[in-house]
Image (cartoon, rainbow, N blue to C red; front, side, top):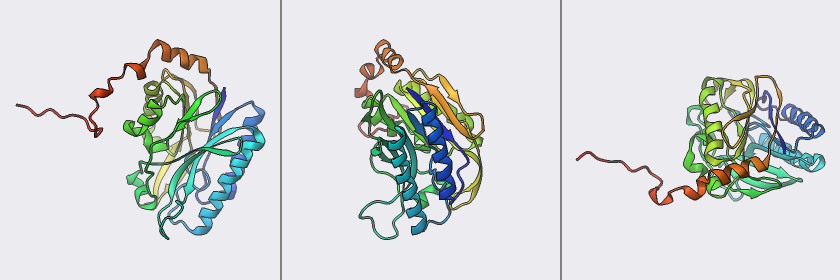
Length: 279
C-alpha cells in the first residue's frame, strides 16, 4: 500500500487557496500510485481568531470537494476541519473534526477530544465526546486522532483494542516541540503495532484567539509498526510518500502478541494510575 502525508503552508482563512493546493496534491498523488493521503489539521482554514457562518460554509464545501475527489481519483483522504454539531444551540462552538473519505464516502468521523489550551483552542472549539472509531478498509483497518490527542494514551485505547492497523494523524505541531512530535508518533506506532501516517504543516502563522506566532517544521512522518521511520518531511511543501506492507505488520503481531499479553485487570476502572502512600 502506497501512502502519503501532504504537508503545506495552510493559509489562515484562505479556503480557496488551501483547497487549490490540496487539489493539485491529490492529483499528483493519484498519478504516483498513492492510495491514501493525510492532510494537515484544519487544512481548509487553519486556526482563525474569529469564525463566522460564511467561513464555516466555505470550509464545509472544501471538505465536500475533497470527498468528491476521493471518488474521482480512487483515493482514501484524511484531514481535519471545522464541523458543526446538528441540534447544537445557536452560537455553539464548532468541532475540530477528522474525516476520512474512501470512494467519496465519509467512512470515519472523529471529533478531536483534547483541545490545546495554550492557544485557547478550548475556548474556540467544543471537544469531541467519543473515542476514535476503527473501520475496516482494504488492505488495512484504519483509525486516527488529531494532533494534541497524540499525547493522551488513554484516548487511543479504542483503536488499540480494536486492532487498528493504520493510524492517520492530521496535525499543526510547532517546530519548537519537534522532539515530542517525533517521539510520540513513533511511540504510538510501536505501542499499537500499527503504521502511522502523520501530516504536519509548514510555514509560520498566528494561531487561534491568542494569535500565538508559531513556526511549523514540515516534519510529517510515516512510521512502521516497529516504531521505525519510513519517510519524513524535511520542511518543503509536498508529498511525503512511503510503501506499507500489511504482511509485515501482521507478522510482527504474531511474533509479539501485545494485545493478547496485556494485563487489563491491572488497569483501574477509572483509568487513573494507582498511587502508593508511604506507611
